[in-house]
Length: 577
Image (tube, rainbow, N blue to C red; front, side, top):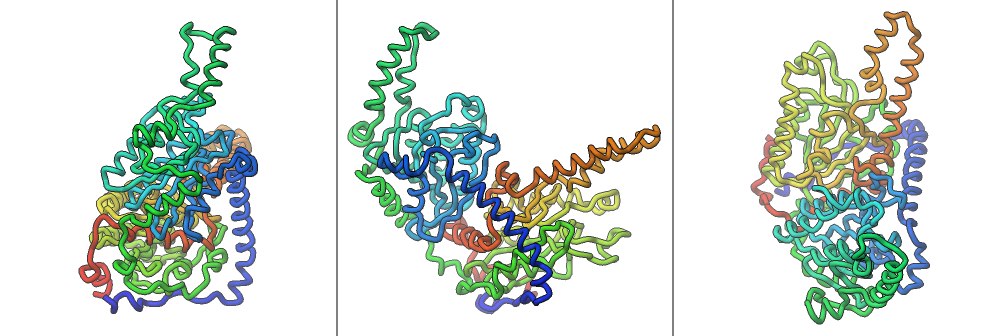
């Protein structure tokens, strides 16, 4: 298949001096947003006790453990700002991401032992569910750094129970193991109750000499009162019991290595646990990249730094999507699928780090008076019409057949609306795209370049495609909402304006409400807000976007569940004709 993939069609062009000058303001604005995200990330990293205080106890922080464990330059954090319950701690208390250990990709997650010794906090089970789902979708190992003191008891009602509560993790671990996906756990510190199940539910347990796991911790064992209430006498008994179990918590290494055998290995030093994890990761199932690469890896012909000039923060300003893509894919080369059909959508095959990927994105700008063909109005890029939806259905279905992972690039204002659009079957064809995605069984990822709006956010591989969407990335330019704030304000108050006008009353009070709603939409769709609420899994710097796409492609092709041999691919042959 060398004639198809070694040298594909080049596209894109260098930025001229005029474009460099006109985009300078945009560059400054992008860097300002990215700097603001950096500050929010630092708050998460600095949450809880100072690193120096943890180290003074002879203990490493989760960040130090990650730095030691993960191969240099391969850490790609996810969910750093995720905090949907707005915890006072500023974090869900788990840190996760994609990284290589001993040259193999893994999903890596650990409790932040600087914050309440790694306790369960609100929002944490959803965070963990996303990480375990990522391991499931990519079919790669899950590596845990366990250091979990159990439940934050004063807020247990926010996360303990329910279908997606904290106990879901243990069932998800069992599901991964049944699928043949190993879960490795390095265990530190005291891990009672939920922390005990967190320690025991992985596949292989690597323990530090001072760690323990138990159904109940010292606090639980010393906290039972036969009187049904507490008084001074009971308090004295609690004090004695607490001293006893503080001295020697249940479930020590002596129990779980020497007696139960749950701990397969015990290490004197903290780094020994991490060395054990690295040793096992070196033996994990993984294809040599040459098995799936269609060409030698190559950098784009244009710098990724151009992205901050090419993607406008001004949502109403148009740009050339192909110029963006040319800064992300190998050699700035592609094979475009049906370029003359459905012009509002780009579909094509590209290479990322030598691996074949499918790319789908929203073209921008005026589409002409004669498109869409079913309407008496002209089409505008970013909106989806009949042909574009059909083209995506075809392309996604072919990618599923050929086992090609899909990268979606969203900048969409939604699907065409009105009776004309309904007669053109856009509602049904949009749902057809959801069906096409669901039946592919190939991993996908989404980059929300700017707008993720209305049903188009769902049908274009959004995080709601949660059997296939591995993760969603946001940028400094990202906005996600059901519709633009101005549109929402008009939809909410237009009839009220008519009533006030007909009654002869002033319109200013309604206009004030409209402006307030539009501002709320704006504030609640900023990149940091999207990350905090989980609309995106991470806000990444534009300069780092290609690195995340390389991590995605490398993870997908490390140990895929199914294979289509290169010489049996049909999509590139259909493109060639």
